Image (cartoon, rainbow, N blue to C red; front, side, top):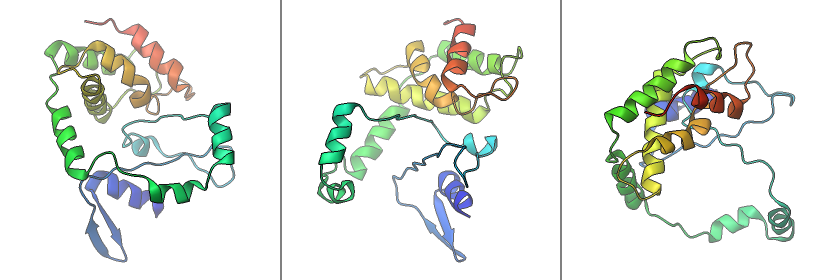
Length: 193
């Protein structure tokens, strides 16, 4: 039930409980955490469900100083009540609109398509990147360029976001999933236009 509700929210921007469907507020986003698959009661998501996530980002452990602040500081749940928002919803929607206006040249789309095509051929990858992955790569590259203060996407933007966008979607030929190594191999296989 939880996975179904999560997927409904991500795809349809609504949630249904006890037969009643409610629209989610605009804007909204979904963050999910993934426990190690070795833990009891944890099951890996099927590829079709993983493909719906824009990115996978591994946070790792905090450095020593940050961990000390966690240990010595006040309760994190209590701190949320005192946090001040950096953007209001209207400002976030305006920024999202500006991201959609970042220019993507035909040559850059050729590069993205070459990356996608390479992931689907040659036997290096067990399953290629989906059309949804291609859309995610273009959207994330636009956002990366916008955050860098540019009005157009460069190949370096695609390269910067590809590990986070494609890492959870790529598998080696025998099913292994070393996201960073697979993403770097894909980047190495395709020349920049």
